[in-house]
Image (cartoon, rainbow, N blue to C red; front, side, top):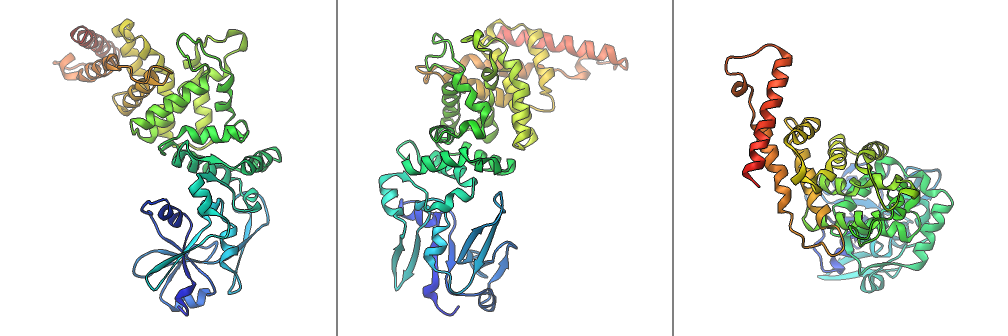
Length: 415
């Protein structure tokens, strides 16, 4: 490379270092070079949309500085310009947030930070602010804004002008360009952050939650009985349940099911509030449609549907008879899908503690679910029919009765 002074660490790596965190990856921008020079220096080009090069020894990514111009809709509706005349400021200006629009250069053992858009001040003030008006050209940046707040926590605020910009993007239909797979990518990453509720809270504060996730937004007006839910509405309850899932360091399937479990409350008729009778059954189809719309992986979708359908059972485990347990496990197909019970059990724990004043509640009573599951799965064909059996109806009836008996015994032993 002609001039090492043209190499800069950029983006999230600089932000993380400023915040005292170890960056996961180092991304570099090269200013004043060409693809031909990069290849001649031994770099390997990857990516068809714009020139990105892999360092032959470290594997780090190096991208040529570029300008971008909006030419169409969606996140692919851009053209990029490369050339030796593209400046570092121009490259940084196209980035989403000021905290991500800094560059660092190492020279003679010292590090110099280039911060043309005030990222350092915003990090120190814990403010998320869009870098430039180019923010409005890519609706995915709205989701990234919300995801970064879910990562950084409630001490961080969205700048007022950024909230207004996001609101205007929603009003002008820019968010309609969001692609389902991109929404799921950002949402699933946000769900795994330390403060996942802030992803949805941020969209709500910017008045665009109803445009992207109307099913979740409807929970705001789904009033709850204060006797059982002093938090007041199904949205707040759902966010508290999701928070519990994060506190337990739960996997993505559990966090998604926690988000979905009360979706049926959003369609309760207003004259029936604050009662939500049947929301568990009604919610199954909503979870299915929501998941299919955003292309949620099938296994995560199916386990969320099962948790939605049966989460109310966990509030009355001591009243369920063995036949009901067997019917539930049959419907959940637990012999081939034990993970669905794991998800249901975890959602039950989060649901128990996801109410104001209930954050320290015991959930030992939920262990009955696991005892019953173990008994259900313990029944073997050879034990029921030691001499064999070919009649399908007799097999089904015999296995069912044996499972009911096994579950009944487990319930008695674990009272």
